[in-house]
Length: 211
Image 1 (cartoon, one colour):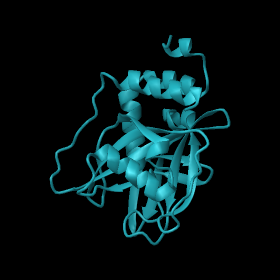
Image 2 (spheres, rainbow, N blue to C red):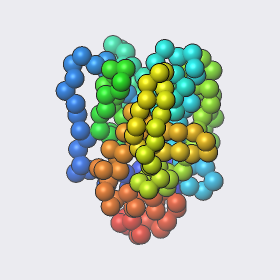
Image 3 (cartoon, rainbow, N blue to C red):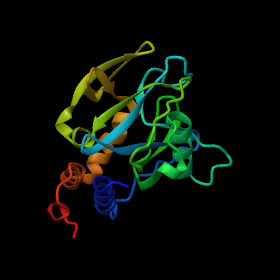
């Protein structure tokens, strides 16, 4: 793993060590997990999203993290997130690892989603599954962790209108459950978000508390 991602992962772990993820009690929702993949490109930490194809039965056309419903054979939800990442973008278990668990969210389609932060090995070759992924969207972690980047937005989707804070990037809109996961993360991180941004930009470890 690159030094930037090593330091970013360490900063995430330290920031979230005493801030336990929020778990929701919803037995009627179907269990699912997603991975927020951190990848180094252009000398900084980036976050990889998928643009879902329009043919999918749920959340068609949305920007999301790789992930999906848990299978009975999955040993845990972290494995679900990694398995689905492999299936959707071709980055498999030997090239990705989980760093931290985030707050659960429930989607409008009644999935109880457990998100995880993960890091990808350098030099990974993305192989999006064309049946599920139209394309990838890569956003700098520094933008993801900048609350000012999230603006009130109206989204029209499948005949429904949603009003919520969303993140725009190069013409794409990150909204819905994915945006809520990111905003929940910012709430948990508080001032520590700046430490993680510094790590993701390659700042000296001493600047964000690492020795």
